[in-house]
Length: 155
Image (cartoon, rainbow, N blue to C red):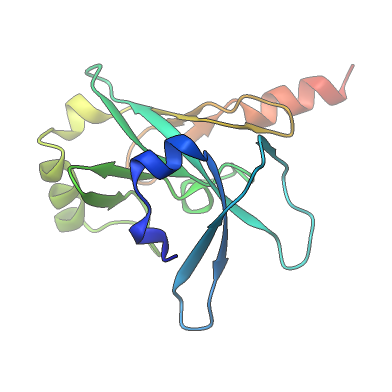
């Protein structure tokens, strides 16, 4: 199935889906029975999307998915909100232009001030860690993953 065909109910029923990028750039997904994912060391790396909840600065809640297995930057995590049938990508192939940012926020009927920072909470653990991703704006994020991993390895 094409990634843009997935519904919130499918994500809620099966929170982890494996994805593969085709030669033509199309992203195909298939459901899994996984309950957790690991940072992938395979070559090519395995990719997963995970049902996620998003909590905006103003308290509004949204749902969608992200790819938290390598939470080093926004373009790796690829957060997506599915809202009223719209598939809203924070960082598709590149950072959004000012015009694209306005379109994104208008689709949610919000402003950057009310939306950011937005917290992304993936519905599955990564390497046995509950990842929390704070999206500061359309280009920057913070995550607790690396601090938790570093602390776990230092003990």
